[in-house]
Length: 305
Figure (cartoon, rainbow, N blue to C red):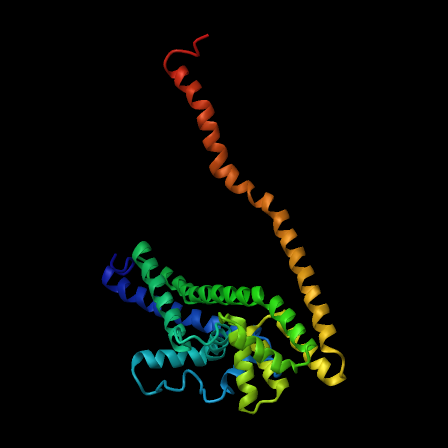
């Protein structure tokens, strides 16, 4: 009978072996799918190349030692297996290059998310095999980073139409567009994300970058289509010698029209979105207030008529 029904002493190591095999298999499967489905990099819009070409800034993971501790080896394994160095540097750039989190800390947040998710699933279900699905926690920090990027881009877009109008007025007064941007930055009392990015662009030009390269780097750091179109207008004006003031005025008018349409669309969707809280929170409360006296009368001996 012992041959037909293995004992717990035999099943224990088998479970852990299956856990290790499933863990490694899931990593291999993810790596294969990621490499097969990954799109080829765009040489002209590669944020990773831009990140590594920043003046005076090396790659954020150059300090990792391949012969260091367990955490450093794990970091290097994940970076090389999933090409995370490119992705994390892109996210860090779109975040505005904050001091915290750094790309290395972003990687550690992802590792902690995976470890915590696996530990919670293991503790709740008491199954090391099912706990492998906790690796999905590795991607939870990406949702938080993307939310911060969207908030930053929204802040940039709130100030962008005003910046375009001011640039058009200043250029119409006779200044060069780079001088106009510098004047706008210096006269502003509160530095926004957009003004900080334009300030970086002006600093790059003072360091020796061409105007076209500095403008291109501005579009890559923000990742916003409207700014990419704005930079295209400036480059087109430089190449063709057309009037930049008229282009900027027409572009600002078009942006205001799009913003008005977006506001009307959101206003039209508001009534539909209000149905859910109405059905869940408001209607039940109204029904309870209306029917509670009737139900109380029925329970105490009738309606009284």
